[in-house]
Length: 120
Image 1 (spheres, rainbow, N blue to C red):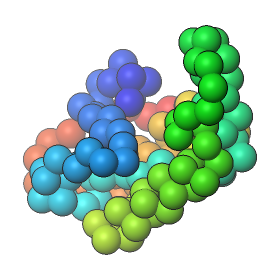
Image 2: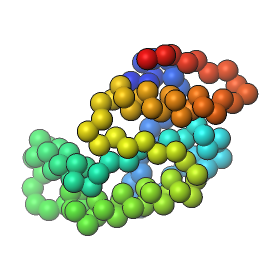
Image 3: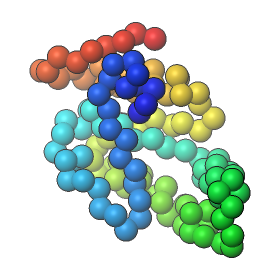
């Protein structure tokens, strides 16, 4: 979201956190403006374990528990399906490529409001 914002896009990064409901607005905006991000289970676990190591987390946590992470990813898929949202696979993909893909998705369904398009 920061990368897109630097290039003039108004974006929101809404994390999907177990036990915390998503803002209702996400289902009231044009579904073509909402893009979900997907990542492979193994890669997300690697990131989270590394983050815990850097932060000095001691002992097992749900944050890096393989079963809990799997459930989080499945919950995200359900949300994307229910909302009819497009999904971009981000595993091992550079931020620039992800941003470009998101822009293609959003601009394929232009709305009545003017939005700034920055080509890459």
